[in-house]
Image (tube, rainbow, N blue to C red; front, side, top):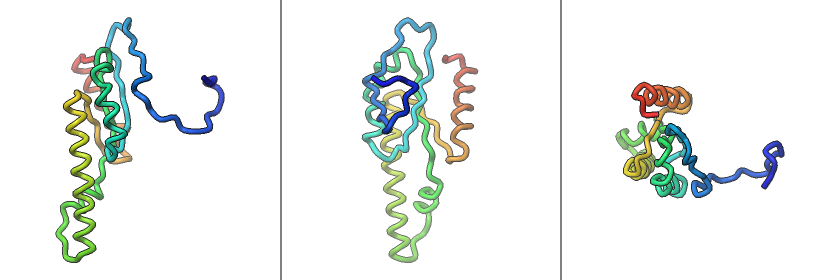
Amino acid sequence: MTDATEPRTRMERYDPTTIEPRWQARWAELGLYDSDLLDESQALPLSEQAPLLRRKHLLLCASMNDPIADTLAGERSSSDDQAYRRAAAAAILEDRDAIKLHLRKSDVGLVEAPAGELAIAAVNRYLEIKNKHVL
């Protein structure tokens, strides 16, 4: 184990199995995780560990939405190139929707916003949760 003050030479990957729940906590805590929602290998470990984490934590997954994919998926195709772009964008959105559904079934909340608005959207969701006295 390295000292927290030592610089890290590589990025460590999130491993939800290493999280130790605080069983003595009085209130639930908010667990905010970020994901691009493009790769199931990134999102599925969180949904697999959700039952354990939900015992004392409210789980949210923050992700940037893709307005370019939204636009391309809805465009009409007048050429083969545009048809290919439309199909690729639609496939990306379909994959994201499948991952979001999987997370929702695991009771993981979602915060989605464009890149420049994601931090504000996450704070607003936190304030909404606090107003509802969930935490």
